[in-house]
Amino acid sequence: MYIYGENTIEITNLPNNKTNEYIQERLRKSLNKYGRLKILRCLSHRNDPYINNNVCYATFHNKKDMYKCIRNVNIRFPLSLQNKILKFKSLYNDKCNDYHYFYKQEHYNYSAINVALNLFKYLQHNNCFINIKDIYKHVFEYSYYNHKIVSSGISIYKVFNKWEKFIDFFDNLFIKTKKDNQIIITPRLIDDKNLCIYLNNKLIDLKRKTNSLNSVYWRQDSVQLPE
Image 1 (tube, rainbow, N blue to C red):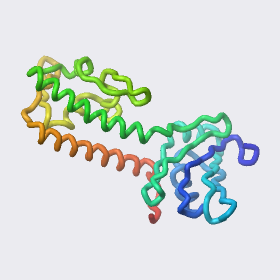
Image 2 (cartoon, rainbow, N blue to C red):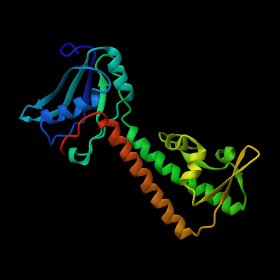
Image 3 (cartoon, rainbow, N blue to C red):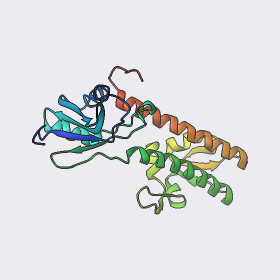
Image 4 (cartoon, rainbow, N blue to C red):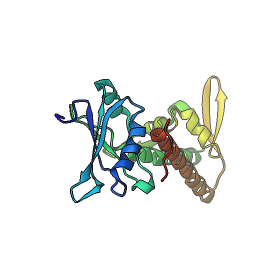
């Protein structure tokens, strides 16, 4: 901190198959979204000056931009850069970004599929319908950190923002009916084989959506660099 200043973040878990200049250019285009950078420097390996030492320092002109970066930045490099998830830490107060951000996205995608399956089986087995507001009372999911069984909802809000969009996404499984300002959900007729194929395809769709959003997120407003 005494060398680069208190508005500095330390970046680790960098790929080691590219030169320092290449990594610096990639990071500069990503971090400039949060504020003006004063310094961005990757340290060289002591045995090879053309390979980075897995550490980079980025200094912002003001502390506000540094905090905004720490709170919001989540960068996963593409496969050509070893698919690395970068770790960010403030040298001023040791605050870090959410390193589990991308793993949480994968967890929520799988949980959404499981919620859809369990809801469909519940309605099919009991031969009933359900108010969309009462789904969380009958269908459960696993939490991310301690893997406890909790009422369903967190994965739905993380992926779809609300239950209605969740039902619309799985339109081949559920029928949505509006009655007296209420939304009633009933199951469609589908056999187990087609159900499995349908849910696998929906999981692929969710993964593609997540990958496209992450790619846009860290490359937004910047010129594409060659892989």
